[in-house]
Each structure stands twice: as structure tokens, then as C-alpha cells.
Amino acid sequence: MDAIIGAGGIAKPDDPLLGLLAQGEPKALLPIAGKPMAQWALDAVAATDRIENVVVIGLTPEHGLHCGAKPVHYMRSAGSIFDNARAGCARVLELNPESTRTLWVSADLPLLTPAMFNWFIDRTMESEHELYYQIIEQSVMESRFPACKRTYTRLKRKTVCGGDVSAINPNVASGAHPAFGKISAARKSVAKQAALVGLRPLLLLLTRQLTSDRAAAIVRKRLGLHGVFIDTPYPEMGMDVDKPEQYEIARHELERRPNR
Image (tube, rainbow, N blue to C red; front, side):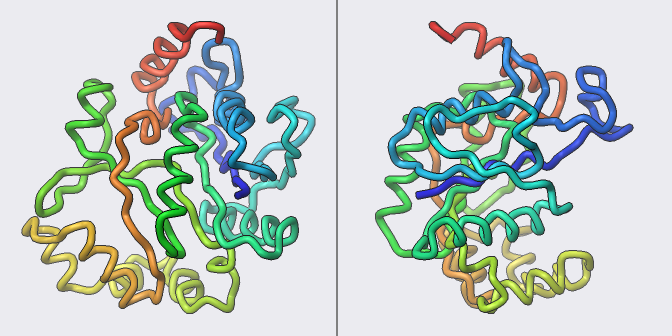
């Protein structure tokens, strides 16, 4: 399997982390516990034997990052996360035309470990889907990081947040897949985005009658995208660094690691 590291974000004037970064600087280069933030994620990728090629979007070789012995292919940011995912998937298919799964990893996840990657990759091998999306229960997240301040969604039997590592069939990002045209047409219109979901699923969500299985079925019906939600036991996979308090949590955890 290959991996795409999404590192296209830059510090803007209203960014909560601006005090730790210069305006316009890539957020992936935020120094934390002695390394750029993205390097921690790359170190975890380097230490797993399940990943071959690595595509880094938003940085260049001049930034001095590495991924052990794994080949790293750098790409400039294409703009939005949607456009970056599309460009990254296209690059993966150039490197491996037979690819049916690739990881998407946010560069702002410095607490990732090789064991977490291996666990998630193993889960994706248990079924044939086009999209594997992580959800983490609030109780799991807050038992590990009580001050993490994540945004949660209430489902029928649990309250969850999204993880920041997912897997996708890279062919989905090509114009040949029916989901691509629908998502592309809706990405700049709130009304079109709502239409993709539909009124009934929104009502189910608001009344806490929506389950993760039903949500996956709705995505499949309305977008033609065969996806699955994976309950994730690792809160670190959802512990992205967006705010100063999250930065402090991650820094504290990393500085406690032996042989870091």
C-alpha cells in the first residue's frame, strides 16, 4: 500500500497557531519536541513494512524531511484538501497502476506510531470497500486526552469524532467514478452539499437515530461510494494539532517518549 501525506495547509492571519509559526509558513513544519510536526508522522510511516511509496503534498525536498528508506515523492499543494486528494491519488496511480488502496494521512498527527498504521491497514484488508473512514468514540478520545477539545457527532448509540487517517481506492479520485463528479460539483456550494446528503439523513442525525452502518449505506446510495466506518481504538489517530492547547498536549506526550 502507498501513503499520501497531506501537508498543504499554511499559517493564515487568523490561525490559532500563528504565534508558533510565521504567516504563510507550512503548518506541517511546526517545530514540536525537536522535529517538524510532519516528520513525526513520516517517522511512523518509515517504520512500518506495510507502506511502500510515500507522496507528500504541500512540501518540497528542500524542507529536509525524510521517510527512512522509503521513496518520497513531493508535490506542490493543489489548493483545497479535495484537490490535493485528487492530485495525490493520481500520483499514486502513476507509481502503482494496480493500486486499489492508499492511505491519506494528515501531516498534523505527530502522535502516530507504526503499530497504529499496521492495525488500520489490517482492518482495510478485511473487506473490499472504496473508502475506509475512521471514527473514534468520545469516551475513547477523552479518556486519553481529556482536554483535546474535539468536535463530536452524536449517532444513535454513540458520540464520535472523525479520525485523520483514512484509506481510499485512488481510482475514486478519477473522473470515471460517479462519486467524483457529484462531489466536485458540490464542493463550493453549501446547498449542493446538503442535497448530496438529503433531508432524511439530516433529520436522522439531528434526532440521534443515525447509526454508522446506516450512514455508510446513505453514502453508497447517494454517491455510489462503497465506504465503511471503522471504530478506532487509538485516539492518537484523531489527535491533530490545530490549536495551542492541542500543541501542548502533543508536545508533552512526545517529550515523554523514550529514545525519541
